[in-house]
Length: 120
Image 1 (spheres, one colour):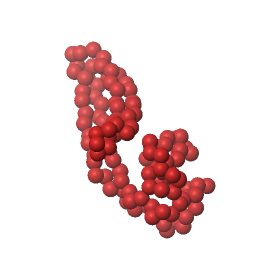
Image 2 (spheres, helix red, strand yellow):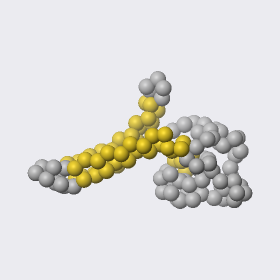
Image 3 (cartoon, helix red, strand yellow):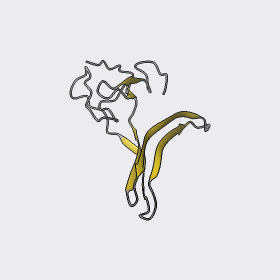
Image 4 (cartoon, helix red, strand yellow):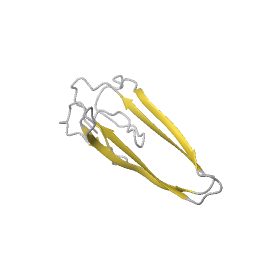
């Protein structure tokens, strides 16, 4: 998690709905997808997100095997290869012949032009 000061690019806050850490500038929580209310004119909508990275993959537990367990781990590294975040996203088990699909997407928006938003 970044330590940016409130009102600057990368500043974070807690979603009032799901309690996940999200960007202060978010108009919609990317975790729970609830809309967030800001004290700004209704016409000032966020620019559409660009998705420069989207990866999807699936795997199936063979029908002739026992149960499998899995752990979904996400790691973020900076340009020097240093780990800046690591999060266990989910765990689970799969019975024979079950399938799971995993999708990773990175959504990017331009940082607000210094305008600090206030929550209701």
